[in-house]
Image 1: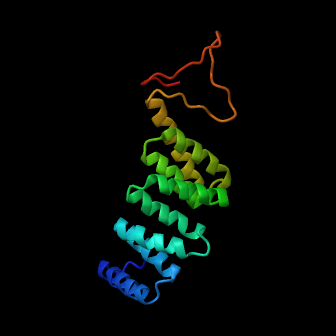
Image 2: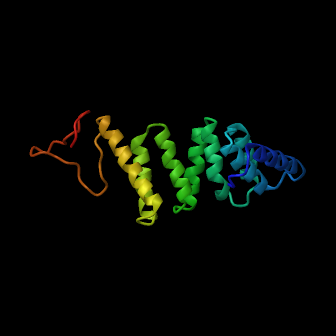
Image 3: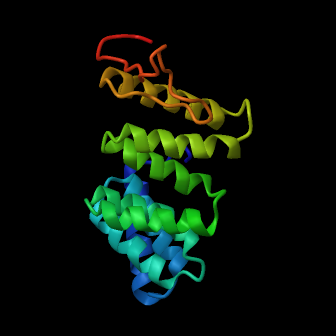
Length: 178
């Protein structure tokens, strides 16, 4: 956004958009824009209502699914948000935005194992050396760190769990480092 745009400009624009949507209630792009604006403007209830309208009107549900899921998360409707994101990812496995929000959702619930699985699935889809690739790598490291601090064994895909001579699985105890 232009740095000269004030809070009042955004409020005026939002009001104008709402007025236009009263006259053209079937304009899903208008509802999507209103939803995104109110999502950023910290009005989750308004965002959820606007994005619900956009979702019901949109010819391509996938283009509205991610912001709608974010609004649902903000209004405490995690199960519905989870369904939307899973459907968006099933429809388009390369939907990075949906995958990213889905991983973040697990992180918010401190479900580090699920977040880890979701980030690891995302990594191969991202260009090596890109900012997003580095961000996901850092997120993976963070989730692994959190699991280790909680004494939960972190398994790396493609490697067997570390075992000692007797074949017993070695566990990382809280406070220990492997």
